[in-house]
Image 1 (cartoon, helix red, strand yellow):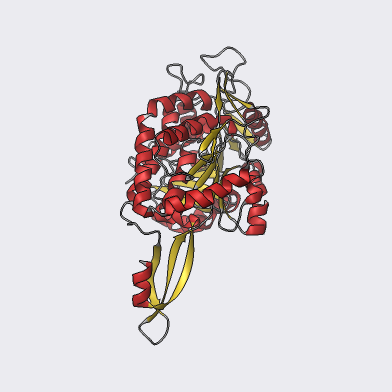
Image 2: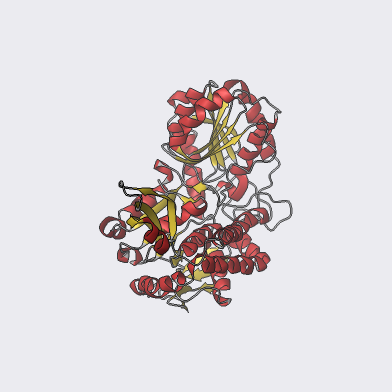
Amino acid sequence: MIRLESYVLDSWQPGTGTPRTLLNPATEEPLAETSSEGIDFESVLNHARVVGGPNLRALGFSGRAALLKAMSRTLYAQREHLLDIAMANGGNTRKDAKFDVDGATATLAYYASLGKNLGETNLLQDAESEQLTQSPRFHGLHVWSPREGAAVHINAFNFPAWGTFEKAAVALLAGMPIITKPATSSAWLAYEMVKIVIDEGILPAGALQLICGSTGDLLDHLGPQDVLAFTGSADTGATLRGTQGPVSASSRINVEADSLNSAVLGPDAERGSEIYLAAVRNIVTEMTQKAGQKCTAIRRILVPEALLEAVEEDVAAELDTYTIGNPTEPGVRMGPLATAGQLRDYRAGVATLAQEASIVYGSATEVSPVGVPENTGFFAGPVLLKVEDTQSAVAVHALEVFGPVATILPYDGSASEAAELLARGAGSLAASVYSSDKTFLRELLPAMGPHHGRILVIDKKVADTATGHGMVLPQVVHGGPGRAGGGEELGGLRGLRFYMQRTGFQGNKALLDRLLS
């Protein structure tokens, strides 16, 4: 069993006190232990601000882009080693492990390519300047410059690689040093990736610090130039909003929380059609990938009443092809949940949903994983439910079961009813719509917009080429309103703006252009 240390003040520190043990969720074998007790978190913040920030800003965009490119290449060279850790500590199948690790290196590479053409400056001009008075010389313009604090990143357990490094890519390119804290239960992968980057000497001093364990009083010391980016539960996000930094110092905070995401089959989605098959494929993938432990996973499936029986049968038939068990065993397509606590929550959640819905496939208590002794591991089987009375259902729009669980909701095939049902989720990260009916889409999509961060539209022309429902790409924003946290990440250059300050300048256009370009 290894000891995970924190990397702070440009050195590795093991922490004191009683460590927390990390387990293999398939075998319950102890893998690692960690503690962050004894770390001076105020000094950690100051080190990032005083050392890391100036070092990064001295490089300009193109210099920082080169760092991201080196990070991506170095981590990719250790890909097989990292996949092994993801399978052991995360309970991931190899395919799921690749989804996480490759997502991290690809996002680093994307932001490296985005930044290399921005030059050696630290400034980004926001659109063209505008003439403000009768004088053609007097103009106003908006310019983004990097904030002079630290970026604190608190990440979720389900994507220790991608979650850590998609945030890191954007913050580093923007010119802000990072203090990153992975969820402790799956921290080994993030620890190993940071260690690889540090051992290679890629980043300047103070640019990247890692906390394995509790953040202690770190958030109490956030100041007006610092930012806090969190991915995790809505409840924790709400708690973080009330901490001293965001409340007293107006530290920026971005929350990306779990939400009730949806798939909508349009009235033209005939059984066996390309869009219908794409919907079934995405529903099953989102239920089983990472054992359903994804913030973007489909939880609600809106189906026209005429298609109910078909969707039930076809989703069930696909789920039947999934073998559950130790992800190191041949043929296993779905691993365990991450922790014993997640398993308890999954079982309780299914029981709650079942009070107003029927289980039409699977069981929350009966699962027979392969490759492990009986009663070992945190395994959960896929469960598909169906609501009989759509209008009276409440729990399906309020409770997310963070596991391989989805619920079918019949609707009348109209855009108006679909939009009303989707809005009951109080804000979602993602939804996918499967239809080529322009009249249906013209009414539905604008109505969905205020309630979703991202909407995937699958018509017959892109059904065989579109990315999956849960694929978060760095070119498109990730986040959502309301329950989803109200935050926004990625989206190309849009993502940098969380780490930068927009300032309005007024003056001689020629002078401002020379000084601020």
